[in-house]
Image (cartoon, rainbow, N blue to C red; front, side, top):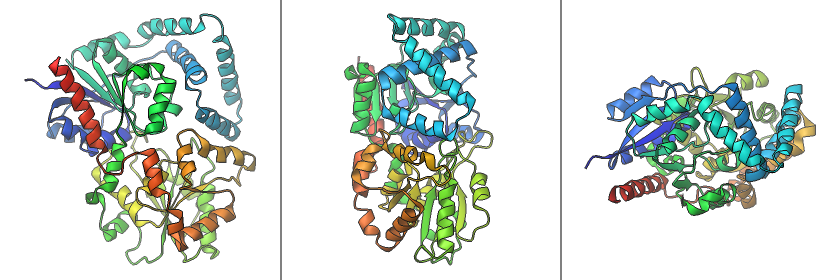
Length: 470
């Protein structure tokens, strides 16, 4: 019997880690014919997949004119106000508004409020979506994409980023011609923080019970759909010893002297777009080490976020003998578009394993670090813009992050002195700070068995085999 063809779009770097590096695509090959749809020309990845017998197509550039873009923005206004109703978006919006008080931001907020008021009028929702359906055909390449998809002769679609604009029209085209639609939500914050997902999927796979309930609340039709809690495949690496480098090799990789005996603080930076003043915390730690306020004279390994520029941190910090800068995977032309390799993942796993205390600002890295039972500290103050300190702390109370706060598995430092105190506590008596590490893992990724990829694969297999038996 000929294998079913399953289309799998990849639209940014993190998808490569999930779809390719976990071995998911190799497992799918055993019962289906995977067809990768790549949204950018990553030549080394394409060559690698082709050598493995994987079919790859570049998604044609999809045009959307301003008429469609402006109307789609109104749909997101409706979705955020009437359906999502998550405190996360308001928390972030208020924080960013304080960071950027420009006239452009003010006009944007006023426009949003104006459009929301109009949506209370009788029949407004029906008119909104009727117009969206009409201009989708007239003001985008939707009809051409349908023809392109038809030529692929596929049966099923599997995506981990159903909210991505790069995949949006492609996925809607797939749905329109009757393909079976499967999705695994890439991250635990995507349901509450991303915009409207226009496609109704036949099956949803999520990290945890919170994501399960969020889907049912925000997308009521999912009450009649299959939702499976699979855990997070991208965390499977952390339970696989093959991804742990020898410590000397890791030190060479990140630039730490081989004879270094100082303990290591890992600072995992966030993106400038979200936390423009974040470099202050790295500087505070550096100054405290220089002044002898942190016990044991540790060093700091700074890991730059994949969508941030390390130069902004270096410029802010200046010369330092306490900080070593490292980058994650980073695209040449677009920071979001890079080929995440096994070597990149091994470096990350080893970094989490060989460092002594982890610091990040409201990041998934808290969960990553908890997989290695390391003390977790989060800055929750702002000396650069003190008026936004409360709003910054509120970022930890976003819906997706709240279960982490409730475990008490992360210490929130509300001042520079408290940050130093928590670092000293973590270095001197770490056991008291890692008691909740397992709770964080259980709450956020549900499973700690390294088998989440297998659960996703088995769900896909069941759906494809069910179709074959009909």
